[in-house]
Length: 259
Image (cartoon, rainbow, N blue to C red):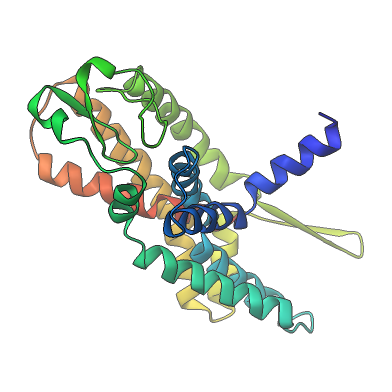
């Protein structure tokens, strides 16, 4: 494959619209009665890429960028901008109203015979599979099925340690640089927060501080607590740990707002 074509394919897969295309294709195939083996993997990838689409984070980030540029440069939102805003809002409503379990059942109903024997559950589509099939592909979504993912704790520990070292660096070094008339001005994350405060944009300043500084710290502290509990085989505060894990999993993507 030519380099230009590879770059085009990579850009398409990284596009926020790519999960929407996969979701539309999967739903169209399901409701048209098409029986194809690719529907499960397509819907799995739509779900897997959805957290990276982040239409809500994108819209808030655009609002912050608009509020910072508008006092200095005359800007206006054109027809394409309003269409993008509408698409982001529609994507948020679609995801909020989507029933994943119902869709997975439409793709392939669970086998009742599995309930009568030892089984494992696919973490993607929740299909019950015979325990003897561990390590193989799920027949519904084609994901690997594991009782425990190999080296999951080791990978989580390595990423948490790396994040702990990079977190202070990310807050000390500049995130952006602005050049005007040979004058270079750099901004750190905290400097961006103070600029929003000075401009009287307190809600946006609080949002950026929470998303860029507070949430990453919460993620690192929470992961460190989980890993320490696993190492010590601690069963204390399991409900609190579960709630914290779901919170980190849900709000973690908001730390990409600066990007």
